Length: 626
Ligand SMILES: Nc1ncnc2c1ncn2[C@@H]1O[C@H](COP(=O)(O)OP(=O)(O)OP(=O)(O)O)[C@@H](O)[C@H]1O
Image (cartoon, rainbow, N blue to C red; front, side, top):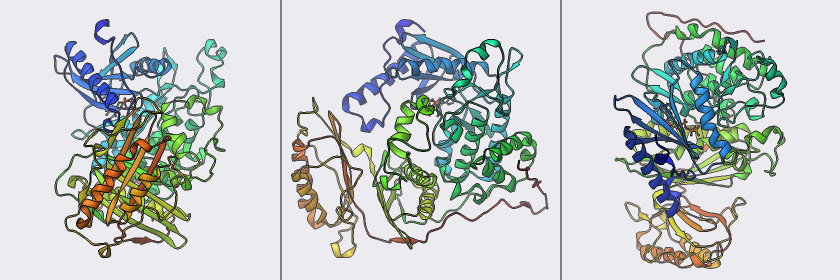
């Protein structure tokens, strides 16, 4: 690759392309096109974007012989220290030689842009599989556990120049595992958080030479932040790196996949013992996910020393899990290509503390190494200060928006139980069963939360978001002529008496919103509130960019003109907006309110000991606790 070839690469910040400003969306499009052209100029073919993460993008392509390749790029706008990581990633991954780990083929460094070229693992990443299929069945979970366990053993026993040099992957999670459905083979990718372990599995320092001893490396962790939805407490709290980190990633991943979730947090409410797994597998996951370190280690050791036992568990035929949704779900007959985004209000009451700047659980010094994009994005502003179940609940809500869905949910927690109003309109019939599982997980977690209060969220199509830009933070937002807030109409016109809807104003001001809307806009919203409709409108004001997200469904068709006029009044009043922040209003039908009693956890359910009529048994040996 020539220096000329990649000098101009520019990678903007990550965001849904529909929520970017016009200029940023164009930059992203141009940049992606440039990458593809450059790679084609180098002789690679069939280039396409296959994934993006917090730090960069991955492209797939093939060489002239048809070999499938992946090219990983870092965003050039990130600090140099983060960009250097791609080189470290290439170095660490380059050390490894294992059939389930893609091989590094080349590392290019031109100016500030680095590109890592590696073998492409065939298949689909497990997060995508889980979103497509919902909870993954017990046979495949055990098969994945065995294959991942073998990779962890290889990393634990890794030697360099004849000396033990265990390696930690540091970011095991479903989206970093590629699964070949044809051969049922798993590959571990994304070595961007991998390091040499400082401690071995017995928590003894790994020291190979005097230099290591003298370097003082053992005073401070060398660990990288993995995904906080999957890493264990030791890694999150800045402990010295050890192979135990990856056992936590393995447990969280298998647990999330078996339960149809995208995080580890909910294991007390939806325990591994309730997922229909063989008892042995469920017990291993329960102990790995427990708070007791000795139990975690014993379970990790047991797993890695009994992989053949797990491999020999006998299963009956796979059965597709049928799922009755606990809330009404409307499914479109045909797939619509929308880009769902969830906006939730009143999140702060899920926090155990109101102070979000410090957390008693965490030592800010130990956390200094976490000071990066992921930490900011996922943790500090979002989940900090919440209990595990609350985190699991919010993660379950986010998962709903991974499906093409519009509508919303209102959850009222009362002393006697939980009331749920919902309007969930799924735009992809093929995802019905997986989506219903995801909805049920939200309900199950809501039932386990004990607070009084209300949580609301709405799902809208980011393709309908209006973007209005201004030159500076002090000039006015002026909409281009003809811009209007879109709405759809219900199939038949309904008068107010034929179905109640929530008011925009019933819960008072939302403590999480920081934008005060001008009187003129508030007046229009009050008038809108009097017209029979459902939906939401959210104003998001940034220094130079206003986004108006909305999902509107007019129920009383006789008021269409008035409804339209009020939406136009809002647009006309945009120049009066001042300040920055977000403010939103939602109005959902009071239809089919569902009531659920509180329930602390799901009942145990194991895979049958005798899955086959012919009486074949699998061993049900339990590992001993320390
Ligand atoms: N070797 C590979 N074979 C197949 N697919 C790959 C490979 N490398 C990356 N991908 C795809 O690209 C996506 C992003 O790659 P990767 O996870 O390495 O990037 P990242 O920027 O480090 O992401 P994250 O922030 O999620 O950790 C993966 O989820 C996967 O779908």
